[in-house]
Structures are given as structure tokens and as C-alpha cells.
Image (cartoon, rainbow, N blue to C red; front, side, top):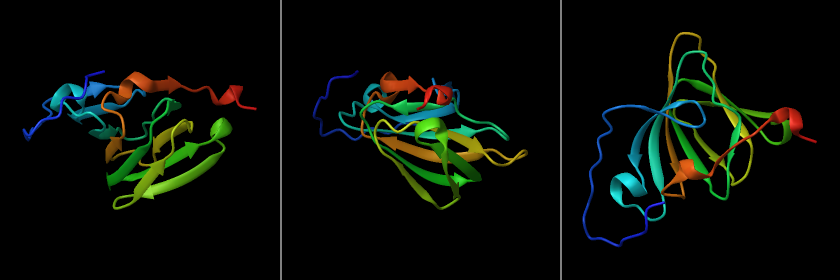
Length: 136
């Protein structure tokens, strides 16, 4: 995790390549501790391929805010991933800390795109895999 260094410098970041995250989704890394020296947040572009889905996971101790830019995404969440919400382009979604979830692109021919922001500058460090079969 990058230490917070207060600065008066504005940092522009243009992601030039995608990274495969521990959630098994392609991210275009934007703002983070590593890219911009952020001390309290990260913000990225996620692309869910047609028919694709994230690995079930949770974010230990930090919140997630999502804005869907394109497509329709089902987010399964909670114990056993038994609850569900569908988000479309223009929708915001909030995921509290430690809530297991999985994102699924509902289209078989178009990618879904979303901006993902978290209150952790090194958010991938706290992604925890989740096995819905182990839920009580």
C-alpha cells in the first residue's frame, strides 16, 4: 500500500492497458495509491466481457461505489449470493464493506462497462475470494 503523501499536484492518469484483477475481470487502472499517490480512494474502469462474470468475492473493510456506463449487470450478493439486483447504464450501485458479491454481464454479445470507486487506494490488496457453497 502506498503511503499517503499530501500534495498540491494534480495527477492525470490515462490507462493504456488492461489488468486482470483477482476478481477475474479486466480493469483499466485509473486512480490509486500507486498511480496517483491517492491516500484514501481508488477509481477504475471495469469491463465485463459478453456473458462474463466476476469471481465471487468481498472487499475486506472498504466500500464500493459503481456507476454503470453500458450494459446490464446482475449483482448477486449476501450469504450464498442469494440476493440479487440488476443495474443498467446510468445506475449507481453501493456495496458495503465485507458483503460477498458477484457481477454477471447479462448480455451474450455486448460488454458491460462501469466505473468502480473504493475508499482504499490499494483496493486489490483486500479482495477476499468467497465460496457461496460455504455460506450458512
